[in-house]
Length: 248
Image (cartoon, rainbow, N blue to C red):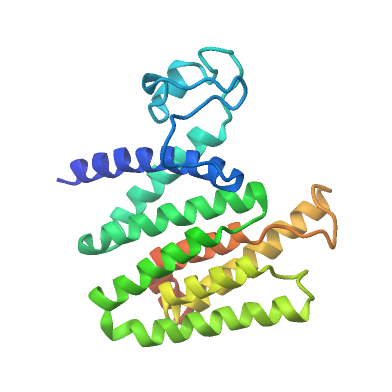
């Protein structure tokens, strides 16, 4: 039975990853995701369906466009593989009845990670979609938690907003504030503490490494969204376990 679950999660993760790859390229460029086949980033020719099979087509084509022979951006198979692995991990971490909701959340988090990493923006459309979905999930599946989760989200967003104002917008963007609202509402208390701790810890650690290796300059803004996504994802899947380990 488990092998079928793994295969199902693998296939759905690769398909979702393929969609996310297109979404994260088109959304910041205000291109429609609802219509039109994928095109090569270089020759702009439409990609045939048999050349657009997640990961498999990339391997068969040797990582190059069939028409112009330019290298296909590694971002596409990387997003597909990462999404598939997260789907499998999620499938063995959460209750089966909650799985569809969690897989949509994970997909949205991957999209936010990629877009903020590449474009330094956290799209409101994705954040508010996930926030609305989270509220519906709480109302129908966990009504006993909705008030504490909404209150936690409010205080998480307020905390980030204060940082945004105190640092005169240099320490935190409004996109981060909205994401904190989502993260806090999704996780509730005390898992939001895990989310915040991991986000700031990894953000500071990676920031120091980038500065020391001269890949970033001190005082120059570094996208914080990827670290927020990392913190939320870990807290979502392993928050209860980490809290037990830390409190012992």
